[in-house]
Amino acid sequence: MEHIPNPPADDGILATSSEGVHSHNQSLPIHRLPPELLQIIIGEAYNQELYRDLFKIRSVCKYWMEIVDSMHELWTRVSLKHNADLLSMILEKSSTQPLFVS
Image (cartoon, rainbow, N blue to C red):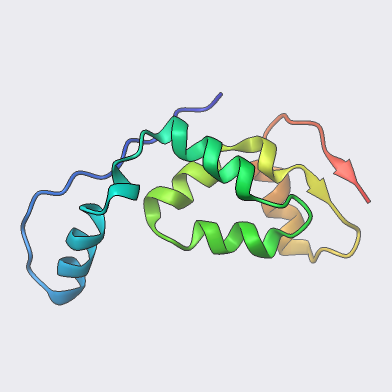
């Protein structure tokens, strides 16, 4: 298994309003979950048929994107209908996991 990133630290310095939102989000309980637990939740919630849903999960925050990207088993479904950019991303993120082609 690849290195699991730790949640970003909240240093409490607020220089701009976007950083203020970032700081607020970091204090929410979901951001204090251990990465291993977040991996379990994401793995159970994700329907491996639709990469659109995986991209929604990735877009929550940088930390979640890093978690999803480290979960190679989520990137194993390949369809001949996928565009070249998505196929390239799937091949990169699946690492050495076996692929399921449909």
